[in-house]
Length: 112
Image (cartoon, rainbow, N blue to C red; front, side, top):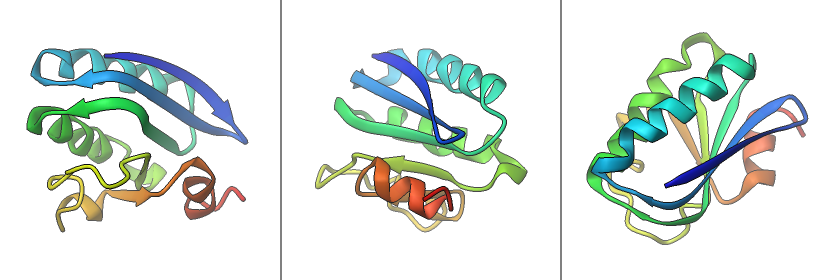
C-alpha cells in the first residue's frame, strides 16, 4: 500500500493506492497519524486508487475514524460498488461518512 497526503480547501486528503491488507495496516495507521498531525481539520481517506482491501484493512479505517474525536466524522470516498461490509456497518457509520467521491466528501464535511 502506498499513500500521499494533500490539503484541499483546509481538509487533509489521504489518498491510498495498492492493497490495504493485514500486512499494510501498520503503514496505514502511520499515514493516518501523519495526516492528523499535519491537518488540524477534517480528513478524507480516498480509496479510489486502492485495488482492494482485506477485512483487517477495513477495520483499520474504522479504527482510524474513531481517533478523530471532536474533529468530526472521517469522510471515506472511492469505495464504489466494491464489497465493504465493515465500512457500511452501523457502528462504522457512526464515526465515518461514505461518499461517492472527493467532491461529495468535501460537501459532507461542509467545505463546499
